[in-house]
Image 1 (cartoon, one colour):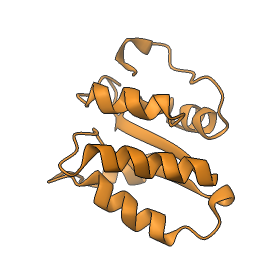
Image 2 (spheres, one colour):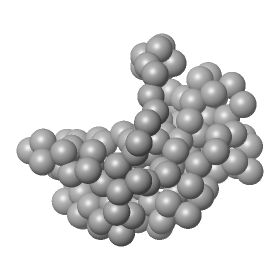
Image 3 (spheres, helix red, strand yellow):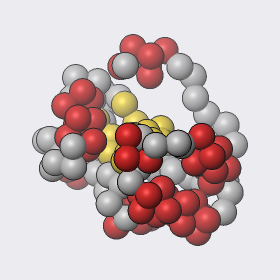
Length: 123
């Protein structure tokens, strides 16, 4: 998965709420679904609706994880307020190095503490 993430160019006008609305419409088995949002969380759409949508997905049983960045530095620019709001909903938002990615993602999905040595750059 790390190679795919590094090999994909992402960016542009972000409407996270709209993207999540599409994802939500495709979910048939919430308890068996993991949504991984790859974003810096700078929302160009409606922030409150985005958070309500995440809360609704979580309430239905969906696992929700946000990858803020995957870089050797592990210290991205991101919307700290949105990351904290997602964390308050029980949806971890994190950045990490490629080497740590598999372990951190597994911990997030399994609802364990994230094994990130430098928590300074985490929400």
